[in-house]
Image 1 (tube, rainbow, N blue to C red):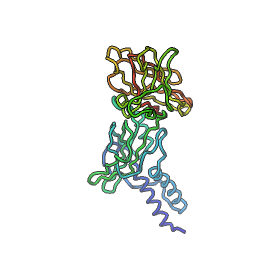
Image 2 (cartoon, one colour):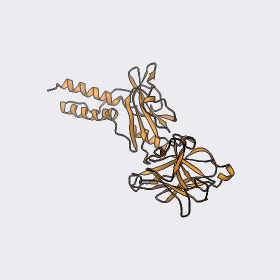
Image 3 (cartoon, one colour):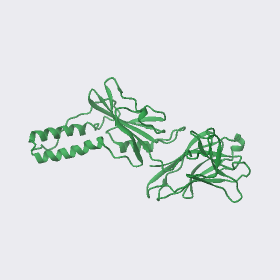
Image 4 (cartoon, rainbow, N blue to C red):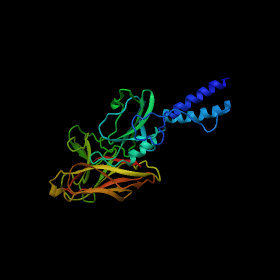
Length: 330
């Protein structure tokens, strides 16, 4: 049977570990400010049973850092490791008052969209230790999803990076980048494939299509086109994911997509128009000449479970290309 002294020693150690993960109030935003690792209980522990209770509580607190649950709407990409990301798509950072993956996720969700890269889709949370003392907790945000290959910042001088984890936002759209369409290796298009369906009104001809073309795509090879592919009518087409989205009833989401309307000259593209529809209701869109792929976000939408997303528009020669479609939980 363990002695009281050993119980007290274990309790003290676990309290130290738990306290090391918390920055005291008022220290937020102060880089490399040492964390107090003292413990001042309001009542003295007098029995082995009370010590065991403290051990259990402290162990639970330590476990939050050791193995936190994935935040709602995110999945773990890597970690914990001793390296922070140095990756493209950086949107800035915020100091947290403790190691809290849920707080970091909310910061990412609420981060203003980058005018080029769009909404935050990834965050890297890590703890700094200076001279062996836990100091700050950093939440760095990105509009591009990174991975462990760029987690190369291990620290500098007396500062060591610890507990570095990367989390990516879950995109409910299957193949939002149209990369699953690979019917050729150079240039081709079709009205539909496994992940997306293009439809035309009665009498229309290929008014919504999917292209394999590195030249037309934002990145990669795939993109969607709204407007008659052969330019032989002025009808609007509709692009829709093949399957309804695996949404949660009552949850809130935002839709992001990248549009470009510059295939024709600016005067011809002035009439370009695309609506984003959520269960048939317009919740956003784009219009007019757009010289380069530009991120566009919908208003916040509510999930009902198995929601439908579609994009309606295009009127040749006012074509619009669409790429990198995403639906993210808020």
